[in-house]
Amino acid sequence: MRDCISKIISFTSPRDACVVASVSKTFESAAKSDIVWDKFVPPEYASLVPRSRVFSSKKELYFALCDDPVLIDDGKKSFWLEKASGKRCIMVSAMTLSITWGDNPQYWQWIPCPEARFERVAELIAKTEQCNGFEDVGIEAVVGVTASRRRLVCFDTAMDEQLPIRRRQRRRNIVKPEEREDGWMEVELGEFFNVGGGLSSDEIEMSALQTKLLHWKSGLIIQGIEFRPTKSQ
Image (cartoon, rainbow, N blue to C red):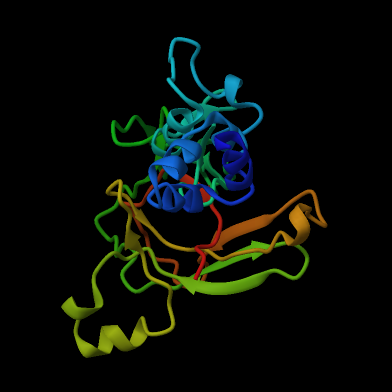
């Protein structure tokens, strides 16, 4: 009986499995079964976790992959699961990005950061006193394939309610950074749709360019670019 219930629950989602566990003791027991959570963990999970780590159940393994991102591809990417759906999330390290003058120490330095997931992060520097930073600077972001969609984003972390009205108006149509749970700031560059689970192209184009205001800028630290599923409404 319990295995039959577990089999049915395995066709739902991790969120649903947690909800149905509150129905009764029978459902709680069925929802904890490895039959359920084996459907939610990636098939290659054995290569994602250290052999030294031992899990008492597939459910414990699942939540470990949600809460503790795993470094893959020689430490150049970070992998984890979205807790509610079990969908895969990836962060690509700044070390793999094509950054203009990224190899020139006059403009960028690659530094260790204890709060980061990766060995090093990129820090934009300016060896001049005439540096205006990213205040209200609109940066053109592109994400997509052939029909790429564009938007203006801003790396300035000042909150609108703290700014004069004139500056608020300049930022009105610009996507602004938001603070993450891990303390980092992030700005959404855009989105793309993976219809049917397959991509029509092998490559997704992403760029963030600002070429209209050519004053010196500094202070930007890039950990990476994150890919994650759109939140369900």
